[in-house]
Image 1 (cartoon, each protein chain N blue to C red):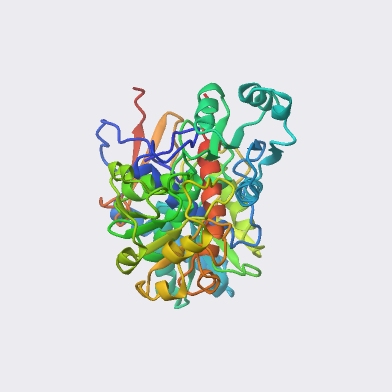
Image 2: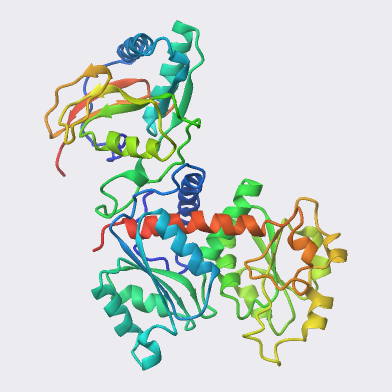
Length: 193
Length: 308
């Protein structure tokens, strides 16, 4: 789920499930796994972030991988709004952003980077979007949080933290550079207005 | 903000924020044109009817291509092939289009207000592709997009619109849009076609193009509409060129980075010198390319929200 755009509820978020150092450790672990899984072609990976927090996470992962493996890593942006399956079913539409991927994609491994992995529909839309840029050798998925409740047969390759949730709960993620708040993840019970 | 309009009837009723929202969305759709597969599934399963009661090739083609790139199904109906010639009313024709499950109706009509009339009566989205001398909103949006792309922003720019303002829906939509986004607008032309009453809109009126050209960042030349002209308004081609045509000599008055725009089709040698139309300051072809992106954005936004 790229969009956490519901207005901030009045509920106090309580104590976070992950704080800044927890997020840092989770991303470091993902970076190690990406390096391990993609040898010897680490230079062929593209980290494609889903706006807006996925883009920031992709940027951080790229920097970590470059530090750890001394290999330059390409990043990109994959906006899924125009590939979603619920266009025409919403009362209003969010901003679409321009996608940007290094092309040609042939022979490359595109790693979709999302903040919270939920139904799988965003991931499906991202895979479709990537297909319009070319035919990568493979597509993988990295996510900071996997909250379960899949509606499609899709799984993540790299997970920062598995977070079992109920349907009525909401994962609230804040990242510096995106939200102007310190890094943290909360699990919040959605209050019906 | 989020988009919540089903119709685009005019620029006049849009806020500056909404205009900017469309332009930003268009930037995302312009990128689609650079992909291997220049098509996205956003409007898959929707039907768009291009309903052109007044002839047009470029606007209709642009809407058609935009719809196809969004995976919509497209039907084209022109005045001569529709039952309008048999006396059916506009509303009845539109009801029949809707009964055929048209989700989006793109309307070009010689009567001002026709799109508004349909928008209020139909569940389908109605997009104004030009109604009489009223508005041509997607043309203004693509003009603004082109200016913003070249100059970074609209606010603070000085834009001259030259020619037949009185009968021009392109001019009206551009005036509304430019003023909302903070540009300064000067209208230039013979007093018959550019009466002073336009100053009530918040623009400056001038009848002397040579005084205006050195001060502008954009010069927007309107087509001399031979088909609409009546003798009493129009000075005659030779005189028009001499007084208001952008000739090579006049172009020397322009700032080096001034953009030359024209909504097309161009009367080469009339409102603009032929070489200038193809010159470095001309963004006429960019306008066409951007028109596709802007129309994709408008169709996506208006056609993409749930029908009420």
